[in-house]
Length: 122
Length: 234
Image 1 (cartoon, rainbow over the protein chains, first blue to last red):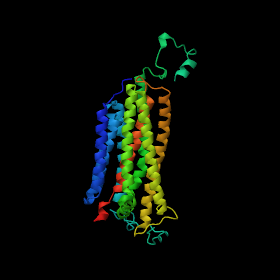
Image 2: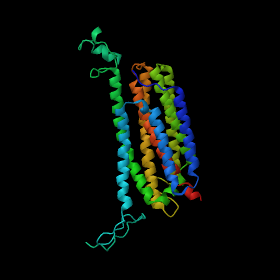
Image 3: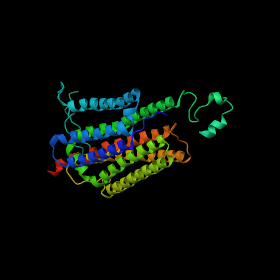
Image 4: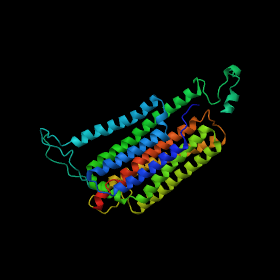
């Protein structure tokens, strides 16, 4: 079978890079970067995942069909995140004709159900 | 499967003209084609797995946007030493898995078996560490439900954080258990000398699954253990 055989050194190098990036992500988590902490952590995780995909999972040496299927997985994942967040993040931007609902505002969960709001125009 | 070939050698006339590798199914023209089909099928399964975990990640993202303070408080409660150790353990197990596949590709059966055993041992280490983490959460009453207890202004929201923590890491741990089972089968097949440089597809497919589970953890670790830590320190 003509599968790609990577040299052992490639695997050790990728392992080293993954360990270093793990250290970096832990160290960076304790540095206050404001709203940048989350994107930085995510960027490091995506880099690590890409290394595993390309070299450990041999996607780099796979057929274009396999590459497309792998890309498709993350494409659809982004659609799920994207469309969900466009809905939830934009709630409360506009006020309806009967006044706004509380959607989009921060909700505090309490042990007892919150009292039902009485002012509905319907 | 040599036995299977011997069994149906007569009915469909295996002769010198019809010689092929015993692992090759008759609806494939070559072993390469069969391996390509297996790889594509495995990846299609992994796409469904991405979406399976993706639903929980969406819930995580949404509640994080809603309750950033609770996410920070909940994250502080997780044990970064155990979580970090487990990250290293899983990455090491991915290395041994990749080396096991490589050994199978190049026909070093004994070395492949050694690396498979190492992978299983590291997988087990991960699960044992996870067990101690879960036990700590149980003792602190951080298991969501009627006995959940958390001191702080956002206890109810932190409970949601812990719900997602247990859902995500629990689903991941189940995948680790299944991976351990798959590795046992691959190990058994290796011991039975089923693989050769001509045919090692099951080892490679098991490797894809194992690496996928590693990738899930690569995201879980920063999202659960590290997120918003700095914001509470200051």
